[in-house]
Image 1: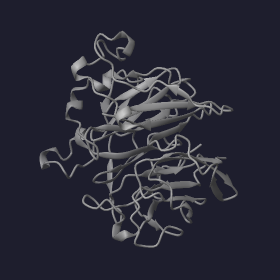
Image 2 (image 1 turned 135 degrees about the horizontal axis):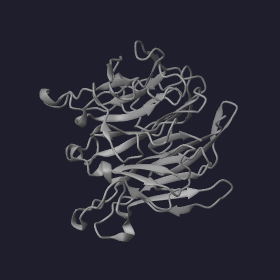
Image 3 (image 1 turned 60 degrees about the vertical axis):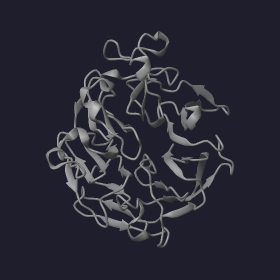
Image 4 (image 1 turned 30 degrees about the vertical axis):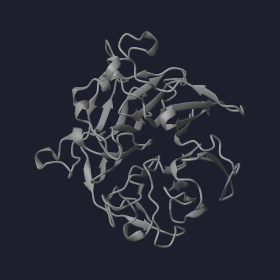
Amino acid sequence: MDETLYVGTRKGLFTLRREGEHWSAVSSTPEFRGEPVSMVLQDPRDDVLYVALNLGHFGVKLWRRTPGDTEWTACAAPAFPAVGNDDAGSGEGGEGGGVADSDAPSVEQIWCLEASGADAPGELWAGTIPGGLFRSHDRGDTWTLVDTLWNLPERSEWMGGGYDHPGIHSICIDPRTSAHVTIGVSTGGVWTTRDSGATWRLAAAGMEADYMPPERRLDPNVQDVHRLVQCAGAPDAFWAQHHNGIFRTVDGGNHWRRIQAQPSSFGFAVAVHPDDPDLAWFVPAVKDECRMPVDGRLIVNRTRDGGETFTALTDGLPAEPAFDLIYRHGLSIDSGGRRLAMGSTTGGLWTSPDGGDHWHCVSAHFPPIYVVRFA
């Protein structure tokens, strides 16, 4: 049973513990105080905790803490290699995997961290802005750019959504085999590999980009996927919150179906039940000018039937007007599929013990929340 909730904010990392149905912060002072936490991961294989920081001018940092330790250990942060720099690594999956010194980008943010399965011990994946995918085989001591993805001709058409540069924000690892990885790109569609990154294929057929000219509306390489999640119990089923709506696939991304929901199909966050592929949660908002809840009313939309119908969940959420926006990683579900946690840009944090039927406000005064994750 999950008893710990990690909350990554603009001003540090808060750790919450649950007693009964009440959640409380372990300390009023966050770890990494004053530093923006862009991502958190507790590796389910060994319970090692990873925290990514976005320090702006000082770059990105990655820290690791093993169970029983009180101190954090600095890990290597993913970095783009330069041609001829053996120390930086030469990429993987192809020859000459670096990029020219004058053209080498900098990692602006670690936007996603995920752990492979038991069949790939020590293996971690990181998605970054700009749109790089990195892999570590040694629990974050070293990272290698997956250059087979970076060097795809199609990547030249990727573009930034809310950021200036495209980014990889979702990494889904098939529980049946860690060699099968599916990623979501904003803006660059959905890509998948079945051979640990040696080869890649687009998997966004059926998605629709209303912001593109008509002749490119269905182009899978220009789809702005805001968040991508996979059902662990039915790994061929994915949900995507897209700039132009909600999309679902039940065949591993071969075809996506567009789903309409009221009061809006726009948003950033999505969570799927770990065992039931038909059960998913979304947080609707207004696009593109406002980026706020529809009519100033914060709700969570839940579907139990694969998107045929939706129920608006509001019990315990703030009365209107409310202007909380939920970022991509601001909605999380626990391993049992019952408890939800949701954090907002205005520092609100809510938990639900019953799949969203009832919400409890843990605090309305956290710093802006970037990520919530159950242990």
